[in-house]
Image (cartoon, rainbow, N blue to C red; front, side, top):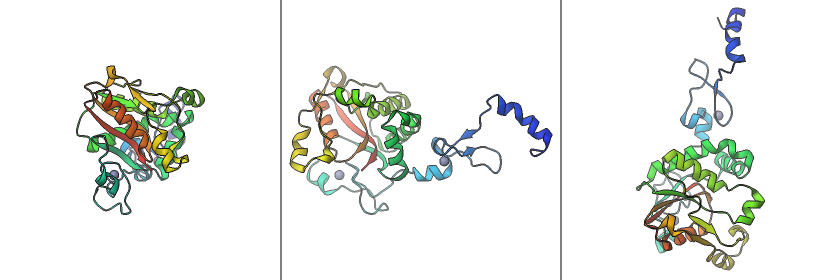
Length: 250
Ligand SMILES: [Zn+2]
Ligand SMILES: [Zn+2]
């Protein structure tokens, strides 16, 4: 009856007065329970987008997420982590910094990307639930230096931590860490400068960290130097434990 005039007229009020169709959160494809339309997948995505955003299941280092050549190989420690343990307890991530996930994160760095906060927070929460061993006392973002925050107007790690704290029902501690001085992006530096670039760049506040298990959150991990320094600062301030969660591993 849908094609008839009566059918179209019957559907009109719903169209006019906002009975919205469910759409894929990413590509906008109409998702419906009726035949012919796609059924909603995880995170309100269509099956194609859900497949493009599937988590990394193997072929990575469980301590730092370093990606090995074969995704099919079981998780195993990389050479760096075998030689020197990371200062955190558990490392959690969703996938490689690649494809759709990388596009989403790049968009998320700018205000226009805030539309995807719910989706990315959902992925972060799912990454947490996959491998977390300890429920955190608080969720803390990697901070931006105030000068950089003023320039960009927005800290994507804070927005991600805020969404994640809501998803997990654990308190957000936006001020647990402070960036004491601006630092150059690690990727732009030679190895010798990288080692000194972040020394003493972060401080943690004991009133937040002391005696607490902290879930430290960032959007992407590249060298990991920032997360190592933040983790050290939290431990020096008396944190009982620190886990690290990032959306993507570069
Ligand atoms: Zn889609
Ligand atoms: Zn590793």
